[in-house]
Length: 240
Length: 298
Image (cartoon, rainbow over all chains, first blue to last red; front, side, top):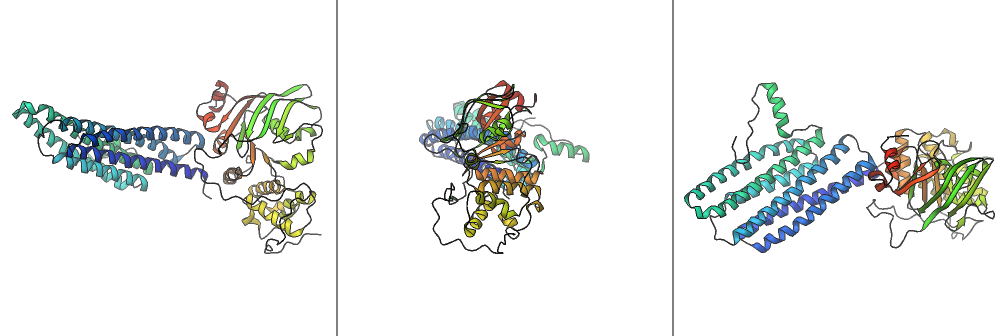
């Protein structure tokens, strides 16, 4: 006998996936706008983000209602609370897309500083991680979600590398500072998108296994048990 | 003489559906299954028709003022839950809709209760016909000590239906609607008392639906049942609302939240608040309501 509330949960999942698709598309468009130096496309991104904001509100209201009206327990409860956090993460992905679009508009007004190589690579990685995270959410695949968390390191490494490269541009020619800073910000926003994708993956592990693995909780505990030192905390630019 | 029910149901009779048998309206063709509850479920273009209405309705058990000027509007095709602590008057209110309170000596009423076009307490109201239009399901399943078939057919026979084929068809439809048919189709002649508690309750629902009511009253319909049977009754309520107006008294707030479109909260005979369930359970307007549903009292 299929229970009525199962349909409600499915509807919530569908809405979240919709939101995820829009968030992915925003990042894609923002990077396109940057590559093509196209302010018109960048402005579309800003409009698209409004739809994401509306979805976040709808999803939040729906989750509160589901908690009140259906009293979910066990994995259903974890699914609802995790969904609220995931929608919050996706809304921030949208905001980062808007930031990138803002940088694209500014940079399109100035001569190109350097051909973009690392930024598109970071974007591809971050967008891929986001898509993968949403996929693990649909399948409740905790193992793939854990794998995803590790891929964040690659994006962080690219970010650090780009940061160093842009510093050297700025030292060589102070007239490049404005444009170089703008690119640093773009890289920073992409690095945050990758982080948000790992957040989503961590929520998926919570839904599937009731285990909270964020803040390196697993590594910390496991590591202490095995005598391995806990990972050193680094900031967004690789400084400890 | 026991009714012999054939093992396989005969094909539906060729005769055209009769327009009227006694006061029985022609059977309604079951609509396609209601789609999943979208946020706007149950709300169609234009204002919903009010099926049940009370205006300044008061009731006294002798000197005791049991219901205090209750004003309620319940739209057609919805489920309304009535919640409140013991003694708040919810069952008294429920029993007013089909005048079961008439059976209690010393009862006096004021104000008005309407079911569609019918003034419930008017002296000219036919109470028997009222109780056909407004059916009731009780807390403890109370099937007659007869066969499953006879339980459902009883009301139809009382209304004057004699045609065997028609009786069989209507019994089947009622048992289908009550989600019991598949479990009892091969033993309609066996005693109703051999069924489990949950099945007996669904049989009582089928019995009630057989005479085509407009309103179905349920007084704690699942409180005597185990969780699985309760879940089936709850699913059934959700399915039935596409065809009937249901009013469910329950002391289980979570159940009220799960199954109802609107919820009425009563306290000491008075209606404190009535609102859309989704609103009442997430942000009630009255402090008293909030205190009750959060378990601060009662």
